[in-house]
Image (spheres, rainbow, N blue to C red):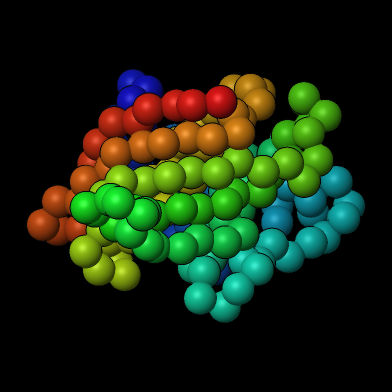
Length: 160
């Protein structure tokens, strides 16, 4: 995990219907995209299905990222449930428009709140990569365990 993630959640403030990480300048869980608004193209970013939670990130300048679809299931022959999430993003410096990345999280959290925390931590990790102007890989597989207080903790393995 990157050093600048240390203490990430301690620098969060509420701000006009969205959460902003003051340390990294990342808007979180917004309905109207600040990145698109800056470009004069107001746009709402919503999940494809009503069962998918609203998770989004943007620096307000060069990228946005949002969770389009997610599912919790047990893979064939597997012993643990996993979360599979499809994130969509734009990254202006790389000329990326409406690209996607698939994230597999193992094991799935034991409750809806724990799964939501796993999805939010995944969005934070992806946003940190986009903030550096780097394209996302097509597939990420992360092991994120949930602590008893539902905080998601753990490392990651990347595949492309």
